[in-house]
Length: 163
Image 1: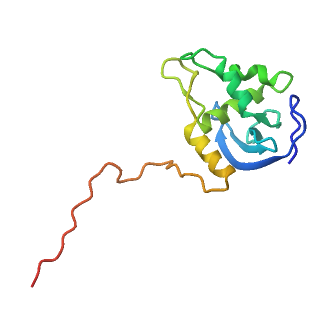
Image 2 (image 1 turned 180 degrees about the vertical axis):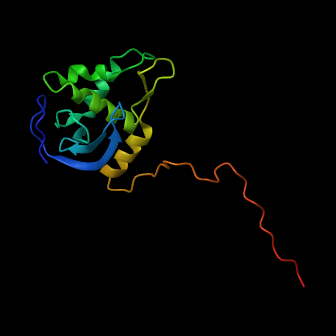
Image 3 (image 1 turned 60 degrees about the vertical axis):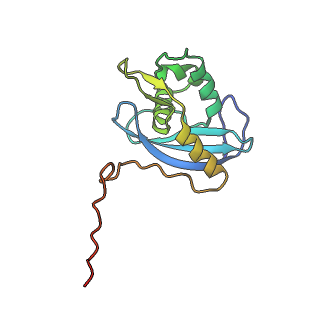
């Protein structure tokens, strides 16, 4: 697969993961890919949207996304507008859709103090998953749903008494 982003020369990208996530509004479902360039850089792109709205399908370096997020002072909330500078000259939906992917993979979580804002967090599970995929290992599994009996003590096993 070839990359054709405006700020990046053409390179080959190895797809590590394909997944879906809800848009920030929750009105549509986005499909995205995470890939590794021939320069060993993690990249991400949105490839489809179940709802209306145009967007750019070019690969975006995760290091560039992190650099933009790093410009926000520590403790300050972020929004999809934080990424606006990365997507100048592209559809306005592109930044919001990319931000929805960042939320899904764990770069941001809903803010506890400001409505419609997000707090930046370290995407440890995502980075571990990508490291495993790059090395060709099975990524660590994260339980999406807690187990039914989580937190409950197991009942003691009764053994039959002797004759």
